Amino acid sequence: MKKQKAIFLDRDGVINIEKNYLYKIKDFEFIPGVIEAIKYLEDKGFLLFIITNQSGIARNYYTKDDFNTLTSWMIEVLKKQNITISQVEFCPHGPYESCTCRKPLTGMIDNILKNYDIDLENSWLIGDKSSDIACGKSANIKNIIQVKSGHEFDTSDADFVIDSLSIKNINNIFI
Image 1: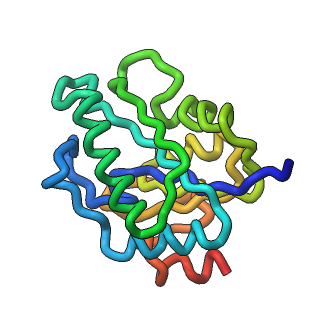
Image 2: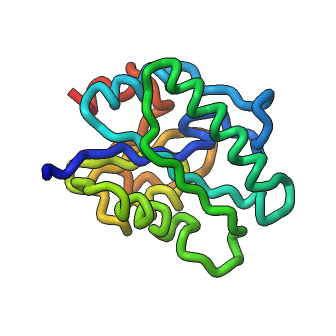
């Protein structure tokens, strides 16, 4: 069976406008152009995965159920646009807890690799924080895109830096 190429997407700051500890549907806003860009990537033959740190759960700002409700809603919105998210992985731990899933560690990607035969050489990670980029590099994902979402970051490890995940910004990357 042939390995599949994939896109590993961070959520906050990449798919939706960054808002501290977002967990309510009414507060969720897709970044302009992101739905079209994600559809474009899927049409290019990539499986789509979301990997997201959610320390608001550890901090008791919201619950896993709150996260799951928002995630189900987001998946349904994307599904109505004929976009399939193959798997969502999230880390509910805080930055000072010992876990293997919180980016920059690779636990979320490792969990996906248990279910899918992914060609990491031809896959991509798209994130907006240094921890996203470090996670992709540690997981041996060959291609990394960093989105400028307002977080300060060092772009030295990203292969590409774009203003936002939109067709205009990725068209020259995914020819």
